Image: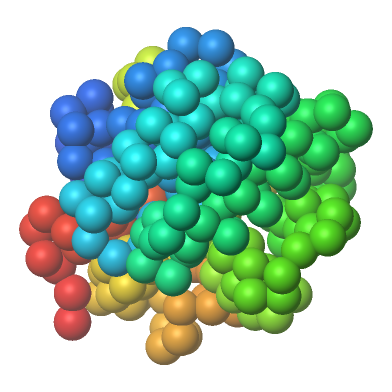
Length: 257
């Protein structure tokens, strides 16, 4: 524990450095920042996070295409689209996420807003839950309760299958974390910041191993749990703020190995 606590001043400094509005300009979080209405923010954020793998410029470009399909009004489109509107969606959206996947996402989100009280309600955590494991699994049950292609399930990762669920956890960080820095929105009350999980990817995983915050070699849910145990030593109330430090050190400072 002492070895981990010794990292706190350094990592806190890096959080301050990268948890800054300038971070938005190169990150997919810029997509929901284009909106002001709560439902528009959470829907656009969810869809941008869902395709957040690969080159970040490509992710942002694909997310912009999604927003255009939604006629720059995500919530209104989700609730009121017609079959004719959906017929305009064709071809690849982002890598293996295609038009069939996207159309299902639209229909499922409509079901969530019409029958389940919206995304925040479906992602609600129970007070006794330590992290996002069970709330993600509950969300998946609701998200896939309507008819869908089996192939689409791969686009919503499952911690039950030992996935790190990086993209969903990134989205949850955006919605839940509360500070005055201007990156994360802090518009959801259904999850406590202390329950959030670091969106573990290649960059943050490699940096965490370099700093000895993580020993497991795979970037899976087992690794996420190990990392979060150590990050909670640094800040039990807001452990996932260190995602800014790990990501920044990896992407911008190339710290690894």
